[in-house]
Length: 501
Image (cartoon, rainbow, N blue to C red; front, side, top):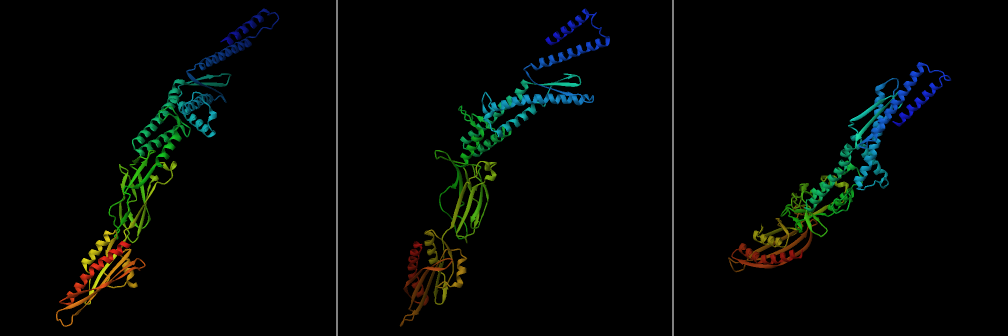
């Protein structure tokens, strides 16, 4: 306004001087006077606009942007839009600087921003996020004003603004609220962890990380997670908790006993695996809901390949059938990282347990008795020998092999039993009449006990037992009595052989 007053006073003084010296100065023509008056009015108009713009921009309740454009070829609308775009660009720069500054304050929890503390990569993230917030803020501009022929003829000037209060609601408050939300998720994860719900804790840690990276990228967001006045980098904190959790999880059998299967490939009971987390004090806690995968390492076995631990961290291995032709069967049980979202980004060390199962050492037994050219297989003696074998921790299978020695042609048939040993008890007896008596017979009973190691059929024990004698009114009765006398010798011999294995 002072400029206008000074300018008008100057015009008046010059006009007065011109009138006072009328006789010396040529009189101004009406046309020139009109031009002069028009120039005075134009200068006054421009000065008024300038003062109005300056007054508006002094209002600290708003961020301002000013821009102008030339009217080319008398095309008013394009020039008007260009002026507004230029004004929006200036407003955008001003707001983006403020967003960048506020973001640094929020993530670092500092009152004075220091961009030098951030790497070039981190600064790029800050700029990118700042532009995003700026675009959101500028999507709803409610004030815009245009000035034609300002600051000169043929130029349009545009003025736009954004409320500082709206900015604080859309940016400052939003940033702080997002930070608080992330902290709440992390604290919820820690509560789940303390309650022993470890996979729930992991899922919340991952959720917090996803929210953090979505809002703040990989910027070092500082949070007082444990509510102890000490701030920690959210990314580093989450990674440390995940690694610490899974590095302390282990798999084991609930019963630390040897697992064996019989000659038919049957297990006495299904093994049970338990997943446990061991804390710093050595206390173990079950890990429920943990996905497991099973794979056969050695042997042939039918099993369910995917399992999940139950409420107490346990799961029964559904092993349906084992090929007993294999003396050893090995199954690998491992935590299925593919079923745990994003775990491979933080932890890659396998969590495994190797279940080794062995076929129970099995003895194939044949007890044959040849008497009077007739072959029998004494059931009682066989059952007694089977009981001895079983009581010494072996499995047993019955065979009928009425020969004293194992012939090469018969080896393959014996091997099909899947036995580890072949115990062949061969008994023979011969009876004859006692001279001078019509109804008196005696019999001599011989027995051999041989133990073969399969599958090569090597003889590792060979015992020929002392001859026993029997008497009877018939050859059959005499042979039976001699056989009965031989049984105890056979049992004692077999007992010693079994105990030596």
